[in-house]
Amino acid sequence: MRPTAVVTGAASGIGRELVAALQHDAWVAGLDRDPVDDDSPAAVHFRVDVTDRNAVGDVIDKIADERGGIDWVICAAGIIRDRVSWKMEGDEWDDVIQVNLTGAFNVVRASLAMLRRSRAGRVVFIGSINGTRGGFGQANYAASKAGLVGLARSLALELARDGVTVNVVTPGFIETPMTRSIPREALQRAIARTPLGRMGLPEDVAAAVRFLCSEESGFVTGVVLPVDGGQLLGATP
Ligand code: NAP
Image (tube, rainbow, N blue to C red; front, side, top):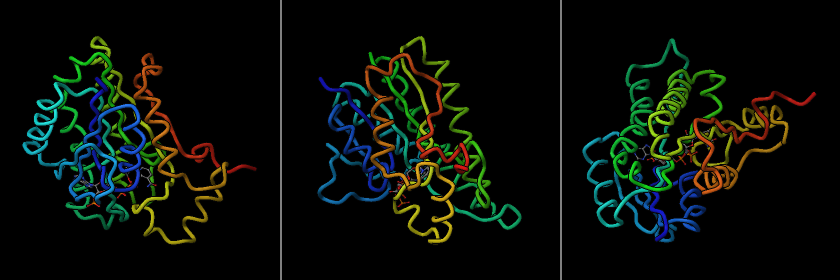
């Protein structure tokens, strides 16, 4: 039987592309608070808010019951609420931490018993290069994404004895609905600072995640893999 994968944020952008890529290797359940369009590649889609711990538990149990287990968990659900820290409201901080960090923990926590029983358990978080370098006006977002790294490395240690690998993919600027609201000049500045000279595509991120879910990546755990066109290296001279 093919592995059973759970992908959050599956209705849009990177998450949607993850579903499309992983369904070549696995049976994929997509989770999102939004509905999906009719041509979604997911085998099944659940509307659920990842911050709702009980609802997440119910959905994960339903998938595990139907499939007899869960093998891969990929957390891509995420939001931004950008504002410089001296103007940031408490709920802008709380919402971003709740969705990006606590939401990922909720989904993995609910799946742990199944992952530990799997013979090829895989967890991949979608972080951000801004979790590594910080982001102006993104104290909440950068903290949430840095938190995913600590979470992943702790889980990697705890789950290694069960053969479960846990890794983080950290994209740079990727063309999705999330980046559509960024002003053109800001995007052009970002591209100018990217050695490979373009924005990334959801497919670029999906290819890295597909590798980290594959059998061939079985000795790779606790890593943070930037998919950023070299942006973290800085501009080319
Ligand atoms: P996107 O197109 O906005 O997709 C994110 C999806 O997650 C949306 O469908 C969103 O629904 C859903 N979501 C948000 N909160 C949720 C919740 N509480 N429960 C369930 N689903 C929820 O964004 P994207 O660009 O594909 O981003 C995907 C991931 O990549 C995010 O974690 C993001 O931080 C990360 N990332 C993106 C970039 C980039 O340049 N695009 C760069 C680095 C990292 P709504 O539309 O209703 O919010």
